[in-house]
Image (cartoon, rainbow over all chains, first blue to last red; front, side, top):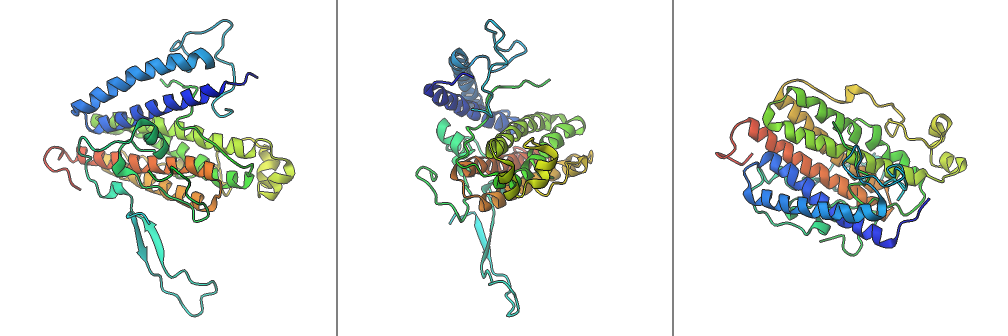
Length: 86
Length: 76
Length: 189
């Protein structure tokens, strides 16, 4: 099975950090729907996660499927390592 | 010790078989005190937030095992 | 529907091959206050709760599945290359006899997961108080597991999960306030 380059782990952690902010803001906004600044922050981070998703997918392959990521050829969704194997 | 710990002193009988633990503590985490979260509370950086498990500093209340030494960077 | 993302919510690390810790950790996999019970409890309550808090139940329920995957990863790594002899020494002999190193939804004492762990009363306040209690119980379970573990990398992941219980409890408490319809007037409870 392919081994991932060392930079992959650092980039993945960046994506995890950005996504964590998005999870936190999501739960916060579920109970604070009128917080304008929090929504601005949310949208900024949503943009940044789009950028990081592309970077990760260029080395790791698709993060999501059912059409939420593009596929390489041959079909590369099945390619390991899976998250728990990393 | 975290300010979110409380202590109590259980009764120790002279006939208790195990050496008594004279002071016991329990956790009273920040969510018990804050009420409805006000806007614009101070945040961690995204990487710190991931590491601690909370975006807002006010909720940070880590738990350590008595058998592990806190490492550098554990306390932010 | 749900979408899987090929990524852990938190970078789980385990420093030692220690199947004994897996034996304790499975409490949060298939136990009464574990991540599976949490996910199913919240997602199931959504159908009979006021619209204002459905989003919160959906999002916390979904996050619980991410936590379930983190716990599974920890158990997987702790037992991955353990020999039958190591499994025996860790007290996992009964588990090994039935499952080899496969994960199974049971608690630390081997009791299989059951739906009676989760309540659904249909009363919004009763259900949200159940959820708050579930978060505090899960927080306490993480404390007891951390107390028995000397693996600093594993404990980092467990501390993260314990902190999430604190945040979820906070949000459920806010949901109660929203249903009391006092938001904007009085924000103290």
